[in-house]
Length: 125
Image 1: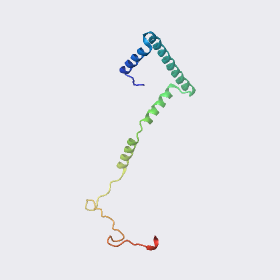
Image 2 (image 1 turned 60 degrees about the horizontal axis):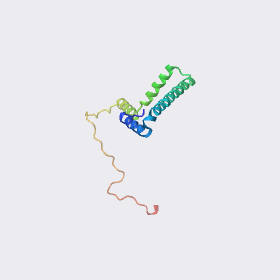
Image 3 (image 1 turned 60 degrees about the vertical axis):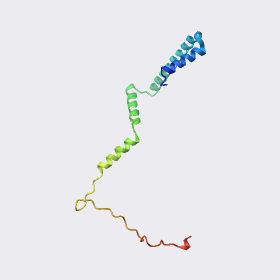
Image 4 (image 1 turned 90 degrees about the vertical axis):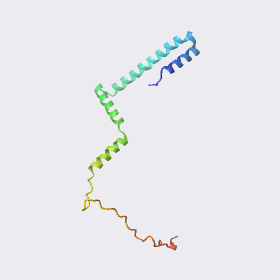
């Protein structure tokens, strides 16, 4: 949960020995352990109360957990790629031209020839 390794525990222990001293250290450790037990018990009681208040049976909570994990697995990229692959497979192929080869695409011709000067209206400004 806190991702604390042995090195960090060693540093905490050395600092505790330096600050508290060897006389008060055992009592401090027992207090920390006592508070950890109290916190754990309160967390378990809170969980039990929530489950009992919601009137959920254990099977229902497992189903809710599975539903939440399924929702957490949804990724927009994965959904988009599956949607696009479905569309690509559903799209009909373009029929080939009469000779079997694709017809070349010609660019559209502009309405005004490119050499003509653009129409300018001096009263429009």
